[in-house]
Amino acid sequence: MTKTDPGTKSARVLIVDDEPSSVELLEVYLSEKGYDIVCAANGRECLRMLDEAGPRVIVLDVRLPDMNGLDILREITRRKNPPHVIIVTAFHDMETTIRAMKFGAFDYIPKPIDVDDLEAAIKRAVDLSRTRPGGLRVGPERDFEEWDIIGKTREMKEIFKTIGILSGNRVTVLIEGETGTGKELVARAIHYHSPYKDEPFIAINCGAIVETLLESELFGHEKGAFTGAISTKKGKFELASEGTILLDEIGEIPMEVQTKLLRFLQQKEFQRVGSERSIRSNARVIAATNRDLAAMVKEGEFREDLFYRLNVASIKVPPLRDRSEDIPLIIEYVLRKINRDLGKGIAQIEKKALRRMTGYSWPGNVRELENILTRAAMYTQGSVILDSVVAPLIGGAKGTDAPAIPGGGAVRSGQILSEKDRIREALEENRWHYGNACKALGMSRPTLNKKMEQYGIPKKHFQGPGTGGKK
Image 1 (cartoon, rainbow, N blue to C red):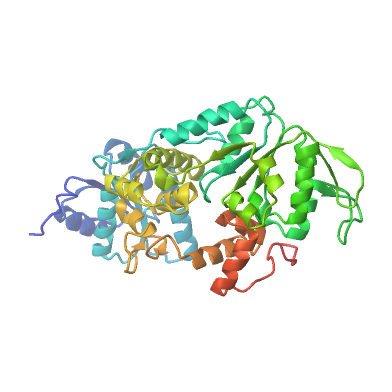
Image 2 (cartoon, rainbow, N blue to C red):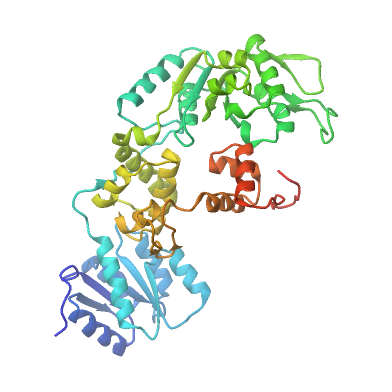
């Protein structure tokens, strides 16, 4: 007699097929494997038994006498806590496969059915549907604000206090911290808790804009000021009006622009490129950097007088590795957003996976954590994120080829991808728009250029629709 798997015993499987011989074969085979089998011959019976029998897995044929299997699949996946659905079909066309996976199928098995492949898919589905002891539970959806900052450590509580103090005035603020720590969130929190929260909040990444265009982006230009200036343009300081302008990667701005920025901070006025007329603005300036500005001042790379003008009040955002106590809170918050934004139903992260994530050093900080959680959620076909999915994403298979993730291909050991691969991926995803790639990578334009040269990545033209110019 075939030995049953204690992990699958009594798991109910609903087989939906109008071919009696196929149903009989699967019923005998899967019963011997320890599953509780119920059957339906058409779509109406399937939907009825979905409520009456409460199966954990449904093996669903696409072609049924009364309904299309894909329509049944869509009806099933709309329900609360639906069972996993494995689609079975004799029609091997790409369109059906794509639609089945798009509508939420757990797997797709062609006919004639390889019973071992089917049983392996059912076992995975049952395994993923089990609630795991321990781990982290994901709460229900909640309202999210674009300035939410998650943390309960002493360092973060001090930052919250400082935000409260600074939101009541308009002094210039310098926010320092590694890439991905959430410096922009701190700036937004200061703005949106202030009396002028209804005024504009404008963020600009100074390192993602070509040096020759940065002055125009910040201060605007007059028509005819330079080649290509076909009309007058307002700059970010003018657009910010009574609101806030965040100068991200402030350490990347060239000396000429530093001089003009200093004048604004001293006199609250500026001139558009190509104009001699001064324009006043009451915009509050918040600067952010992942560089050591004090060291740059000593090396002559940053104006000392500008540094002191920017550093009236300062906030240092700690790296994630220094506040591991906050990691579970951030994980739950991010997974709630993923459930809302991506239509996922993640209810739990396995204890072993949580332990792995809290013990990881997170060189990319919160941004890397969000990236890995998003990928893990996309590769998860149940409600529980398992360690087997998380491990390859954060270095669980060092020195070996990382295992393949269903639907996601092989993932390399170490971090998600090597730095070279991450840069190339960001460039390709943004169609070689260097500014957008810099933003996705969290690095300045000069740093990106240096890395591309280091890794031998050739430069290409922006490949967006309707344009072929460099960005």
